[in-house]
Length: 244
Image 1 (cartoon, rainbow, N blue to C red):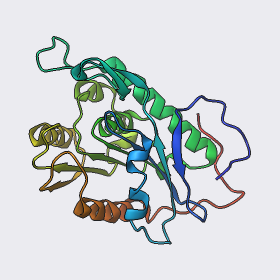
Image 2 (image 1 turned 90 degrees about the vertical axis):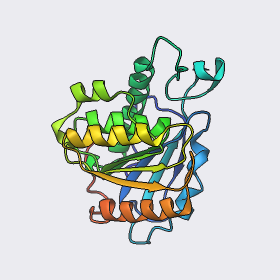
Image 3 (image 1 turned 60 degrees about the horizontal axis):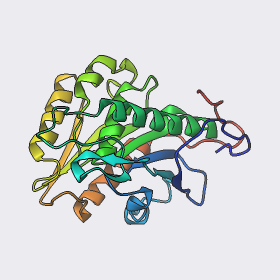
Image 4 (image 1 turned 135 degrees about the vertical axis):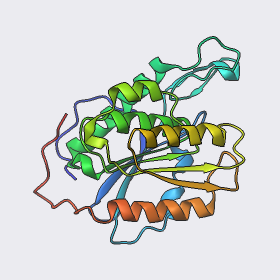
């Protein structure tokens, strides 16, 4: 990584975990509603990735905002969520705002020397929605997108703004069959809609609720090795210039 030149853009506060050696890729992992970047911190160890695949993990903290469905309580959220009875269904403004924030984080990783094809977007619940939205509309080819216990509320916007650069990007979607927060039906509707648009989806489901289980972590490990294991490691002194 190129850590000598400062990045001019303003980025979210993040938890950053770097491997002992030169990272082969960077994973930007977004948490769910009401959590923060520390929520998935333990997963770095639990993934038990091989030494041959040292990865940099970035866990950003979402901005704090009032969440309508939770009686207006202020908490970390990537976008507002409305109750079923509310006239407005989707907070597109919040989704686009958070997508811009994630794009700024991508820009910083580019600045550090990671080419876009070695940057992978991941997220749980709300974070997964932002990862999917951003990855499918990003102008340069990324390494992959992982959406856990999520769906794509901004599907119509993505259909209009999606890019050819990521038309065949590897996508992993994983969901709990008993999820009371985001139903399997919503997740399957997203999978089917994306498949109709030509995307290839690796789908995994588990006997769990709105959470992550051991079997899922094992499947994430396998997928990360498949997607990032063949990516060449950056060479010191021969890093790409940032593409902002």
